[in-house]
Image 1 (cartoon, helix red, strand yellow):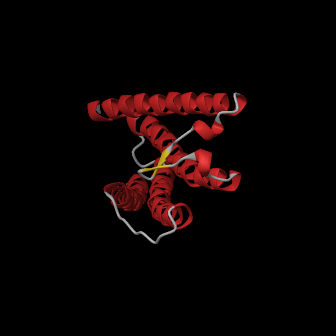
Image 2 (spheres, one colour):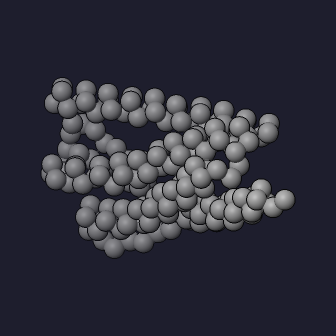
Image 3 (cartoon, rainbow, N blue to C red):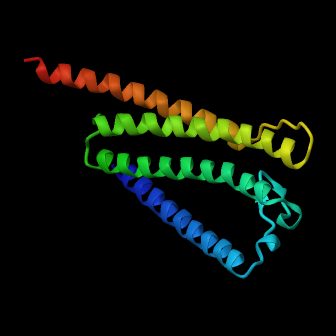
Length: 170
């Protein structure tokens, strides 16, 4: 039980740090737009520095879509994990909430992995005008974690069925 409590606290701290970072970035971008200095932004996307001063408005928008979608998927998976840890902490190991949340987390991690691969391909084709394929540790890690959470969902589903059968047995 102590490990679940520690994990819950760490996930909560991580969640709020990411949320504060997101708010700070949004204020920074809004400030750049209001002051007319959007072209001074030089974000680093997929490990490559972009210069908004040389890009069209369409390219600027396109460069933000994939990272925002990936960030949303990752942040949503943290929300599902936080909700699951509440149930796990209270001893409801095989609840429907935990099982469905683990499956959703797995799917979101797989989307993050696939989205990063597609995003990198699009990035290099659109912005660097070359075909470049690269697998890094985050792609592989998200893929493995996605499959792991989907596996956990199946295991917990089977355990839930066994628990329900056991409760019916006299």
